[in-house]
Length: 253
Length: 260
Image (cartoon, rainbow over all chains, first blue to last red; front, side):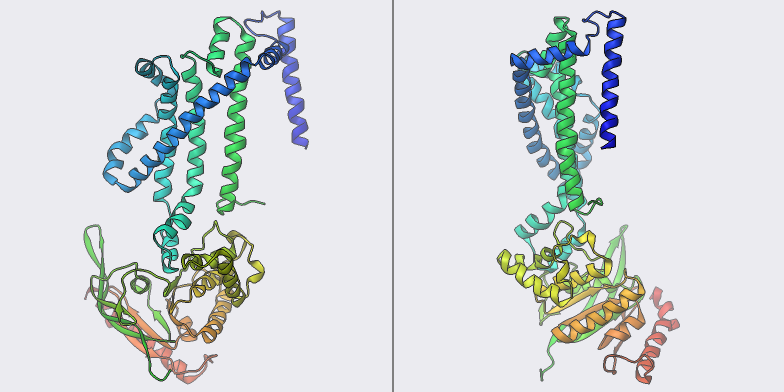
């Protein structure tokens, strides 16, 4: 409770300083609007529904890309874990791909797909497929062999062994992969949306720039941060923590 | 009970692993037999291939030559007739204590309720039914091993294989577990094959001790312990068995034998 109070006080102070700087130095709103300007932008954006539509369209886009990436990534991960030859060839490429920021794929995606949703989804898949593929591979390789042997001497085999031991042993690592993939997908979504037409958070951000509406730009940046934080840290973070405690990998309670 | 039934038989069994392209001989020309309701300790120094013997009986290691017979049939793959208890417990951390014990029963197509009901009986047998809802990381090492034993007994194996099961426990816990195991043995009359490197542990537990020599593992001594339980460590009979074993383990031939 004490931490909560400190946080509230900190943000109150931050907004106060921000407001004072803007008013005292007479900074024009297209350079830095006051906190009330940004609040206004949120208010009218949500009231008229433009921001709601933007958020909704972006979420649909990112979810499509994310789930396609998961399907593809899990298959790739399983193949990499099972076939050594594939791991030392294709597996290398995957590691290299990880160091390319999503925005570098934009020109390629635009040439292939035009300024459409497909271009963004393509970029999301490219980015999000890597962490889940690597997590799946590691999860498969790190199953403790004694657990499998113990299960076998208790009469477990085939489907029972897969369902109750192999997949269960993989879950903590997989959940980490799910979280990382989501974080990558979210960043790729925004990068891609800056360049395509239609509704979305990225497009609304870019529209704010072209209209010199800094309040809208800041409202969208806040939105990106807020949704990212809620999904990555609160949603996936909580699941990951619970799984790690349930699997005995972290102390809890 | 009149006729002694052979459970496990090793016929000229040899095993080697490939280690950096070099053949590493683990066991050589092993011949022995284990009978029903016998408590046999496999005793030997580290690296003598004791665990490999259990792996061969359990069925997840294949011999290079010779035959491992279980009920007179060659061992093909692991199954619940030969359940194994590991030194590192190998409990499933995502299941609670009761469901760990019920695990093997669900593999036998028991209904969930029936599996849990039976599992509870076995938890009771090791005195841990009060901990059935605990998670694996909430209980001590000794309790984990009792759960692992209950889990193995629950599938009603014909043979219970134990790979240095008390090796990770402190002295006090180890002694308690030995007493506990003897109690379970006299109650269930399972055939038990127990691997250990402790001479005193073997003397305390076994009806018969197979002493395995090092590099490559081979049978040095097959000796019956002719003393009834609970055993008095001051009894002359036990003393003489102990000396025979120590003699064999200290035999200079045994060390020279390392280069065959």
